[in-house]
Image (tube, rainbow over all chains, first blue to last red):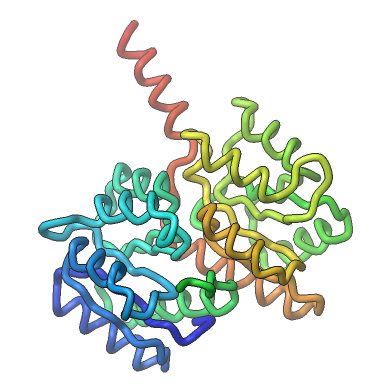
Amino acid sequence: MRNSRPILLLEDDNVDAMTIQRAMNEIKVSNPLVHVANGEDGLIYLHKSDNEKPCLIMLDLNMPKMNGLEFLKIIKSNAEFRQIPVIVLTTSQQEQDKLESFKLSVAGYIVKPTDYKKFVEAVKTLDLYWTLSESPVNMN
Amino acid sequence: MRNSKPILLLEDDTVDAMTVKRALKDLQVLNPLVRASNGEEGLEYLRDTNNPKPCVILLDLNMPKMNGMEFLKVIKADERLKKIPAIVLTTSRDDQERIRGFQLNVAGYIIKPVDYTKFVEAVRIVHLYWTLSEMPDTDEECKNEKFQANSAS
């Protein structure tokens, strides 16, 4: 990643969250991974001023309480949070989910590969791209 | 890229546009490159329903007539165009511009490397990422309209 700020992961499945952490360790991405289990907890994290703002948000779509698209709608209408790039990380291949996500200006939509090696490869590409790209650092 | 739709490049500098084309060719990226030399031309392309919608927009910032930020504001307020990922490709290291770009929800903000080999590497990463990432069906509205026309008849 371009900087050392945390990556905020919204994922209700603990095993999936652990897989992401493991893949990040494997390719030596040292940004801390902040894991929350749904949109509501994601908003709580972002609103708490003591918490460091993330450089990137990785977002699962199907989650209880507040799902990914609901969360996206809220942060993209918030002047402070809208600048954080959001990447959808999901198992959903539904055209409607893709369309809704891109209409809410996600910066990527990745269908989670089930194979671990392919998953690591995906995280590697993600890291390459967000190291090449600048990030909106001035987020206080 | 994920699909074979064109890449729309907004770039006023002909040499820079040729460099992008050359890099895509070197990397064997088969998507056609459509070039517009400012925001106005870009909008004209996007609003002509005869043109296929691009899979991504590569956007320079400093352009005459309508610059990159102005163009971004317009497409991000347009229901039909806001879903197309726009990636800034610029020489500007201005902090304010970068922040404004992300506030307008760019899907990447890349400072053009001057060195050609590094530039090709940057384009390779952009290509890799947008092959991994799904893309919205940008011509979806047209299809819906056709579908509605069909079911009405």
